[in-house]
Image (cartoon, rainbow, N blue to C red):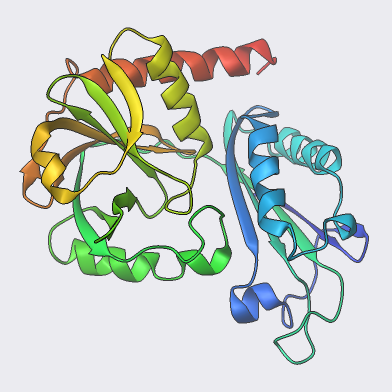
Length: 282
């Protein structure tokens, strides 16, 4: 693992986090992206979202530029020498004397570590009547209840969960966007505006699906529990896993396997990802 921290206008390998609001209050903005060799996957999209999270909250002028962070990340990736890596960025308001109000400059932590290949086995999900407070951004505090929910859900025999709202319906997974394929080959995903995170992988998959001839229609949709009976496939999208099939939500079972549209779309995403890195020298 390689790590650098921007603090007080300089890059450092070690600093004290004792008085940092990120540690004391889970106060910060996070971003996670994948890399192959020293090539970052869709850097600009991730950087733009990180900065959107900082706007009006953490002074952007006190942070290094996007190009500087990108260059530092590439150096860490080369130094780490892994074929596949995950890059994590955390921006906090910095230290605080009263553990409430920032008293100094913001901090930015840049963390690079190997991306371990995990089996994308089909998942069994339960719904949780809850939603993230600021769903269109990746604020650190928004993810504070994820592990608690997952432990409770796994105790019920499920793998993970979906955020669900009685008004807006199914929203997203704890770290993922969710898609459904209806019985008449319509690909749908929940609306994201002020409801769920508009993930980078989500956007790529939507574009790939629209350009393919796999689906009769591709669109955002309000997805209630009752609509699940009209769907035959479902899957998650995320930065580190791409497309992960879902085999069950509550008591509703979904088709999985190599002959599904999910599997065909997954292959299109793998091809797109391979081409993206290859064209950039990875």
